[in-house]
Image (cartoon, rainbow, N blue to C red; front, side, top):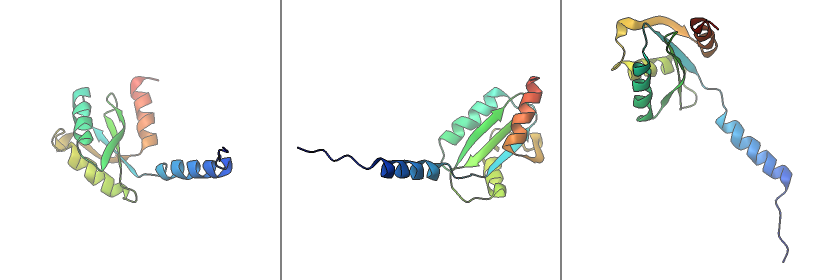
Length: 117
């Protein structure tokens, strides 16, 4: 009996296509929150795990920053921010939310600065 092995080139192409599909650029929206606590961050993360469409991709409690991304491709940054603001509304008072948008790179830099790194 002869076993038929798939062509390794075809397998590599298939694997690359599969991985690249999941790595499409997603719009992110960062939100700065005054006096963010770990409990608030955890509560929002739990809330997001129970709903589809949005997830937290980065959070830094010392800097008071959370960055969100949509699981739906093709949404604008403004739409992601609007969804994120709706998701945190039950946990964070509107007066504590900063008006400026923060991107992921700026959030990481602010976190390093807040931690004194």
